Length: 480
Image 1 (cartoon, rainbow, N blue to C red):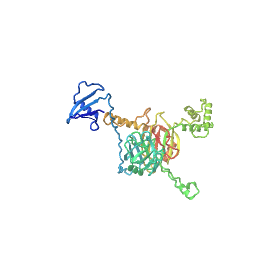
Image 2 (cartoon, helix red, strand yellow):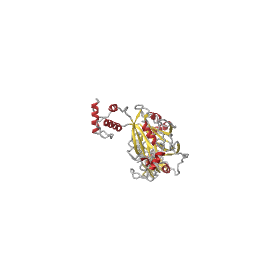
Image 3 (cartoon, rainbow, N blue to C red):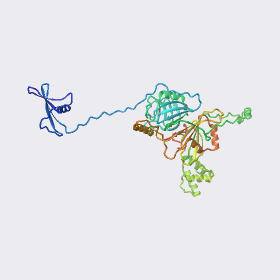
Image 4 (tube, one colour):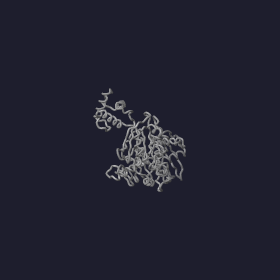
C-alpha cells in the first residue's frame, strides 16, 4: 500500500493511507503518469517512482514501488443459463371435428418434435406439446396400449409425485399424465408429460386398450390395401329347423344358449421364432418320435438334452445335446413335417392370450421391420374393411435432435429434419412385410371370424419384448 505525504507551508509533515475514492495503486499510477520523474529514477520490475505536485496550497509528494508481478485478474461472473420453461395453457386445446366417425382412436407421439397427435381413423383431431424422459430416463419408443386409467394417481417410485389423468402404457412405470411443468426439453423420468388441461381432455376421450405409438421420428398413419390382410367373415346363417327343434326339446344341445362372441378388438403379433419356440418344436417332435423329451414347456431340461443326444446318435449327428439348425432340419425331415417354421403368430384379446401358431417367413434373413396395421370400422355382417398402417424405425431421437441443433448453430439457418437411417440390411416396407408371411388357411379363417373393428396386426423382427407379460398386456413392441 503506497503512502502519501502532505507537506504544508509551515513545514509540518503528515503521513496518511488512502482509504477512500480511487485505490492507492490507481492514484499512484495516475500521479506518476502526470508528473515529472526525478533524475536518477530506477526502472525495472521493482523501480521506485516519485514526484511532487501542488494541490490547494500543499505540496503532494508521492512515492511507491512498482509491483514485480501482475496482479491476478478478478474472475468474471459466471453466466447462468436458464432453461426456458413454457407454462401449460389454461384453455383447453382445440379439437378438430371428426365428422362422427366410428373408426378407432390412435395416439402418436413424436420424440424429436416433442408432439402428441390424436387420430380417429384418418382424421387428425388434436395435437399438443409434450415433455419426455431426460438423460438416463429416456422414454422408450415402440407400440404400446393403454393398460390402466386413473384420474388421481401418485407415483409409487418417485416419492408419491402426483400424476393426474394417468394412462398407463407399461407395468414398469411408463405412462401419459398431466403436469404443470411441460418444458420444451426432456425433463421427466420416462413418462410422457402433457399439459394438465389437455391431459384431462385426452383422459375422457380415450378408452382402455387404445394404441399409443411412440416414434423416433415424425410419422403418421397411411392407408394400405393387400389381400394378405385379414378381412371379416360373415356369420353363418341360422337354421330355423334347428332353432325350432331346440325350443321343442329343451334337453337337446341345439337349444342351449349360443356362446356370446366377444366384440373386443383382437391383437395379432407375427415375429421371428425365438429360442423358446424352437425348443417347443424340438420337444414335440422328439416326443412324437418316442425319444422321451419330457414336458413341452420350451425349456432345456435334462430330459430334453438326453432325448436330443439319443436322436443325434441315432441319425449320425454330432452328439452334443444342443439345439441347432441342423438338428431342427433333421427332425422335420424324419417327422415328415416339411419346412421348419421360422416365424410365429400370436393372438390376444382383452389382454389375455387366445392361441398361437407357427408361420413361415420368406425372404431369408432380411429384417421384417416394425409395422402396425389397424382395422377401421365395419358394419356387422360386412366382409371387407379398410386398414391403416404405421411404420416405425429404430434410432436415437436425442442424437438426431442434437445434430439438427448443431447444424443450425453452424450454418445460422434452418435445415431439413434429420431422417433416421437404419444400419445394415434395409428392413421391409409395410407392404413387403405382408407379402413375406405365409399363414396357414385354417389360421387365417379363424382370425377372420374373430376380427372386430379396431383389431390390429403387428409385425416385428425382434420377438416378444420384455414389457409383454403373460397376462395383463397387449403385445408391446420396443424399438430400442
